[in-house]
Amino acid sequence: MVPRLELFPFRYRDERTGKWVRARYVAELHEIKARYADFEIIGPAEIREVDPRERSFSPHRRELRSEVSNVGAVLEIAGSKPARRFVVAGVAT
Image: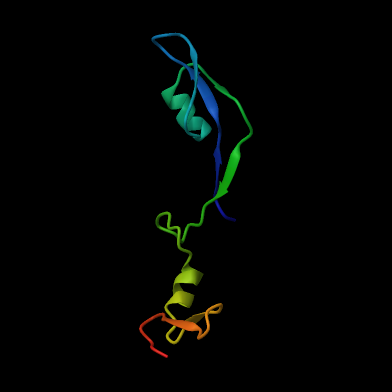
Protein backbone atom coordinates (compact mmCIF):
# COMPACT_ATOMS: atom_id res chain seq x y z
CA MET A 1 0.00 0.00 0.00
CA VAL A 2 1.35 3.37 -1.03
CA PRO A 3 1.27 6.06 1.68
CA ARG A 4 -0.72 9.14 0.80
CA LEU A 5 -0.90 12.73 1.92
CA GLU A 6 -4.18 14.53 2.46
CA LEU A 7 -3.55 18.25 2.10
CA PHE A 8 -6.32 20.73 2.91
CA PRO A 9 -6.90 24.31 1.79
CA PHE A 10 -7.80 26.39 4.84
CA ARG A 11 -8.22 29.83 6.31
CA TYR A 12 -7.26 31.07 9.75
CA ARG A 13 -8.07 34.02 11.96
CA ASP A 14 -5.27 36.59 12.19
CA GLU A 15 -4.39 37.18 15.85
CA ARG A 16 -3.76 40.90 15.44
CA THR A 17 -6.65 41.98 13.23
CA GLY A 18 -9.18 39.25 13.97
CA LYS A 19 -9.87 38.90 10.24
CA TRP A 20 -10.04 35.64 8.35
CA VAL A 21 -7.05 35.07 6.06
CA ARG A 22 -6.94 32.44 3.34
CA ALA A 23 -3.72 30.42 3.62
CA ARG A 24 -1.45 30.48 0.58
CA TYR A 25 -0.58 26.82 0.98
CA VAL A 26 -2.24 23.48 1.70
CA ALA A 27 -1.26 21.38 4.71
CA GLU A 28 -2.12 18.22 6.59
CA LEU A 29 -4.79 18.56 9.25
CA HIS A 30 -2.47 17.82 12.19
CA GLU A 31 -0.06 20.54 11.01
CA ILE A 32 -2.87 23.09 10.75
CA LYS A 33 -4.10 22.23 14.25
CA ALA A 34 -0.60 22.58 15.69
CA ARG A 35 -0.05 26.04 14.19
CA TYR A 36 -3.45 27.79 14.29
CA ALA A 37 -5.91 27.94 17.19
CA ASP A 38 -8.81 29.20 15.07
CA PHE A 39 -9.07 27.81 11.51
CA GLU A 40 -11.56 26.45 8.96
CA ILE A 41 -11.11 23.90 6.19
CA ILE A 42 -12.44 25.59 3.03
CA GLY A 43 -12.27 22.84 0.42
CA PRO A 44 -11.85 19.16 -0.32
CA ALA A 45 -8.59 17.42 0.45
CA GLU A 46 -5.91 17.24 -2.23
CA ILE A 47 -4.68 13.65 -2.13
CA ARG A 48 -1.10 12.92 -3.18
CA GLU A 49 0.42 9.48 -3.48
CA VAL A 50 3.89 9.22 -1.93
CA ASP A 51 6.48 6.92 -3.49
CA PRO A 52 8.68 5.62 -0.64
CA ARG A 53 11.52 4.82 -3.11
CA GLU A 54 11.93 8.50 -4.02
CA ARG A 55 14.15 10.48 -1.65
CA SER A 56 12.95 13.91 -2.79
CA PHE A 57 10.91 15.53 -5.53
CA SER A 58 12.39 15.44 -9.02
CA PRO A 59 10.65 16.82 -12.10
CA HIS A 60 12.46 14.20 -14.20
CA ARG A 61 11.09 10.68 -13.98
CA ARG A 62 13.55 7.80 -13.84
CA GLU A 63 12.17 6.25 -17.05
CA LEU A 64 12.85 9.45 -19.01
CA ARG A 65 16.39 9.77 -17.70
CA SER A 66 17.29 6.26 -18.90
CA GLU A 67 15.73 6.83 -22.35
CA VAL A 68 17.57 10.11 -22.87
CA SER A 69 20.90 8.55 -21.97
CA ASN A 70 20.63 5.87 -24.70
CA VAL A 71 23.50 6.22 -27.14
CA GLY A 72 22.67 6.81 -30.77
CA ALA A 73 19.49 8.81 -30.38
CA VAL A 74 19.32 11.32 -33.22
CA LEU A 75 16.58 13.84 -33.85
CA GLU A 76 15.68 14.94 -37.34
CA ILE A 77 13.73 18.07 -37.93
CA ALA A 78 11.86 18.04 -41.22
CA GLY A 79 10.70 21.12 -43.01
CA SER A 80 13.91 22.48 -44.45
CA LYS A 81 15.31 21.32 -47.81
CA PRO A 82 18.00 19.08 -46.39
CA ALA A 83 16.88 17.74 -43.04
CA ARG A 84 18.91 19.22 -40.23
CA ARG A 85 20.33 16.67 -37.84
CA PHE A 86 21.02 17.23 -34.19
CA VAL A 87 23.36 15.11 -32.17
CA VAL A 88 22.09 13.69 -28.89
CA ALA A 89 24.27 11.83 -26.38
CA GLY A 90 27.50 12.63 -28.23
CA VAL A 91 26.89 10.48 -31.32
CA ALA A 92 27.32 12.17 -34.70
CA THR A 93 25.53 10.92 -37.77
